Length: 515
Image (cartoon, rainbow, N blue to C red; front, side):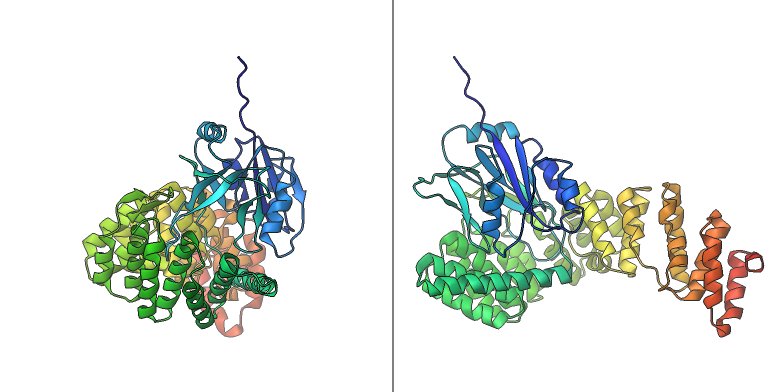
């Protein structure tokens, strides 16, 4: 008896300028039969990285239509089934189990949970379920914004959850400029899509979906009053289905609360409850609303309704640990120092950062932070390092990275993140640069020596450049130091020369005369 062949799978991605995260995504789907990467105009190393994983890299184009781009990418696939992931996502699950379910004949479209791998400090996005596996002959994408998989004409759509599979978002945040550009782009697309639907006279679900997309885009672009007003019309129309209304109601509640309208926020929270697959999603929203209202006791009371872990009927998991930022803040606000430490360490062990670096530095305290840092999972460890690099020359960034270096001496994540730090143009800043230089040189990273970087930085005042160059030469004999010292000394103002000479004589006796 011949054995039924296993289903073939094509992983399909559309990408642009994703060099920082693409490799992780492609590594997670290396097990499939074929990877298709459709590039829409990258200017970084995205294409080069993609070609390390697959020969099927398509130099495509972008036309402000996510659905169309995904369909163009899928057109280059040859597998029986399509798995769609984004560059900042990773697939998680057993390939053997996936193939078993795809070949079972139970469905031609499979839903899997999509959530964050490391919860970004800030508001929590509950995982959504999305059709990410579908038979290539049966499905295609529709929608220029917030695109969805739809069935092809004449296809009978059968949708089932795919057990044991999920997609994890990397959790790394965009910078403010990238966020602003993304919201601006989404607003243009949402306005165009809604205009097209209205011109065609289409109503019902299609119109409600386009209006909800525009409402969310208006909010993201800073036009929150317009977004909330449109959101009321969407709700009153009653045409948005339950799954979409759940996500929409939550977004509107957070927007209203963030702009001081807590009464409207709780109205939207009540609207979310009947639309959600489980009451926990409405209960967890109350945690965020209480924190936005700066009510620590109400925040802790709301947290009591969130289970330690639970999976709802759509396969989405909720973990109380993901709300640790609110718990740590509330406990700190109430002065419960010992409980702050316990909550922070517990969150770290669960792979969650319970706050932004500057918040943790303020809330948790140095000694408790050292314990929290030691408990971090690998993904959360890397995220914390990256977040510190975004903070500039702050005590929190230097302090937390310093604690990380103490916990894991020689760790490359920490050292490479520290390389991105700027150091204050004063003696404490020079001391910080010297400490990191010693760590990096011990790890064989002489080329990234912060003392040399300071000495060569034209944006650093000349006296500080001279001090850094003198230290780099005296301590390490770095060949880059003396030329940098000569350049710095030539730029020192006459009124600063005497004080600088005294400092240099302490840092590197006799060096100025030789230079």
